[in-house]
Image 1 (spheres, rainbow, N blue to C red):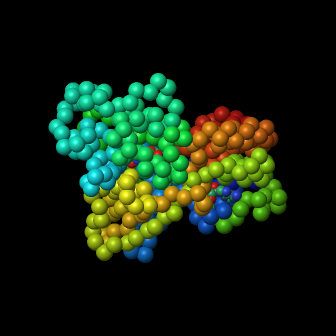
Image 2: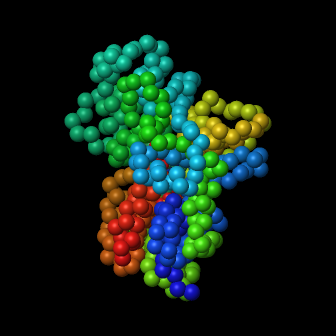
Image 3: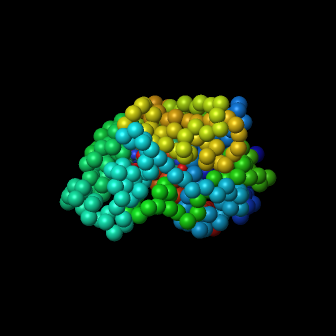
Length: 365
Ligand code: FAD
Ligand code: UDP
């Protein structure tokens, strides 16, 4: 059989491209996925206790991009959820991102919004050119907050000191001078009712889309006839590592089910000082599920394992750029997604990118 498109990877990038090609162009598509399920890293399933858990770490959808939100709303309804996170510092839970509330609770003060500027002015470190994650945290909040909330957490998360990481890493976390304790302030936020896997299944329900699971594309691609390839797997793997291996960061996941209704005060807690793990997620609090049991997830970052994070230092950015130049010269192949572009994309970024690639590189070809 001749396929118009073969798509490598059934994560959000591959699924969005497949959905667009099938529904807008009515062409036939084969998705080849090496795992035994669709969804990529947003995959979720019900565990033995009947709790919906996200198998590759906690995901909440959030975006300011109305077009992306409208697009994804065709395939799911939402559990209206605002992500709030508490960090365990000095024996207490306090809100992160750092906000007026965090500072008041941490230092037992009662500053108002108009007083915070003066307070922070005295704490923050003056840095002429902000380059690293250490710089950005020190320049925004000063030494004490940097050390309590960011420094050791980041060392656990990445295995290197924040002074060696690009400013974009800790720069993802805003610093707020108001009382807003939400983790994300985007206007559209939530988790799919029924879960991300169900949402992905809905996106793939078109009859022109076939999915082959449990298959590394390199094992079968020679025997498949197709016109164009869309690749969402790791960038270096496509080229058989010919410029060397890229560095990725992985996570070891520890799931625990507890015989209680509630385990912790919010869905996500951060552990910047103690323990090996960085965060604990209690899934029911994200999905709104009711049960007298609860399942939590502890995350221990590590080097070996599945590829979850691109590595945010110059060395790896430069190698990725060299691979991207090879990719640009590849005829009849489109590289897209977190792994194939070696970019720290959130879900909405990946969907945005897939919609753009469809419009510019696929629709009128
Ligand atoms: P992936 O989901 O990685 O999909 C790529 C697919 O390709 C995988 O299924 C893989 O098995 C397959 N593949 C790889 N190699 C091959 C091969 N050789 N042959 C066949 N198939 C192959 N984003 C948010 O917006 N909000 C969040 O709260 C959030 N939390 C996150 C938490 C964690 C722990 C992580 C790691 C990411 C989080 N993200 C979050 C980001 C989100 O997961 C990604 O943006 C999104 O899943 C990327 O989709 P993708 O299709 O590019 O990649
Ligand atoms: N970070 C931190 N302390 C926290 C939360 C985050 O030091 O309590 C740093 C850490 O380096 C992390 C980065 O900020 O990798 C981005 O955090 P985010 O929650 O966005 O992580 P992600 O969604 O990428 O897992």
